[in-house]
Amino acid sequence: MRIGIIGGGFMGEAFLRGILSSGIAERSNVAVAELIGSRRRALEEHGVRVTDDPESACIGADVVLLAVKPDDLPATARSLAGAIPAGAVLVSIAAGTPLAEVQRHSGHGASVRVMPNLPAAIGEGAAVYLAAPELSDEQSARVRDVLGGVATAIVEVGDDEAVDLATALHGSGPAYVYLLIEAMVDSAVRLGMKRPEATDLVLATVAGSARYAIESGEHAATLRNAVTSPGGTTAAALSELEAAGVRAAIDDAIEAAFTRALDLGEAE
Image (tube, rainbow, N blue to C red; front, side, top):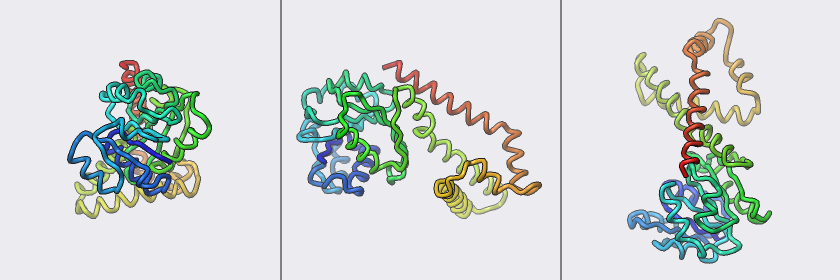
């Protein structure tokens, strides 16, 4: 597979790492376009072709990844009109930009809107994507291959609203988890534990709990009950969380993020 990446920022480089580590493309078949000189020099360390010309990065590509900020997408996509090979699939990871807008600005029908998340940087992300009907089966397979380099959970959805909902869940989700981590560590420090030790324990707990949930396949409520002994410490803690309305707060947070994502899409 030949891949052109337009934008070598944090997520662009995350996809580059995933593409190379998964072996779906050889270094000689990957080109990255980045305007900032210092970023270009950093990207060259990956052994791929790096350029300041987005059109050049599209030459011969099977997949063109638009990894630019939402505000930059319209102009960047318009600049690529006619430069994207007819048989290539255009993949946009710009948050809040509907698929139809990606197609309109680029003039390229075979396009896909993707919402990745932060853990993509270590190949442990989640990704939701919306594919235009113009995609062939081969192009769809290429998209899943590329996403497989950065995500362990890949979900295809049927419309932009579903992408916006996923944005509120897994796109913003790492921030919810980090807030929980921060709060747990701060509480332990307040009660007398050293911060480095508290941090190590909390991170191992969060990572291990997620891994166990994945490998066991059990419902979250079943796993929670397995940790909770009647009248024990966990039961006392959960009682406080329920009394504080944590479930309702999480529900409100995801709904607020969803509403904001819809608003951003309409603004386009």
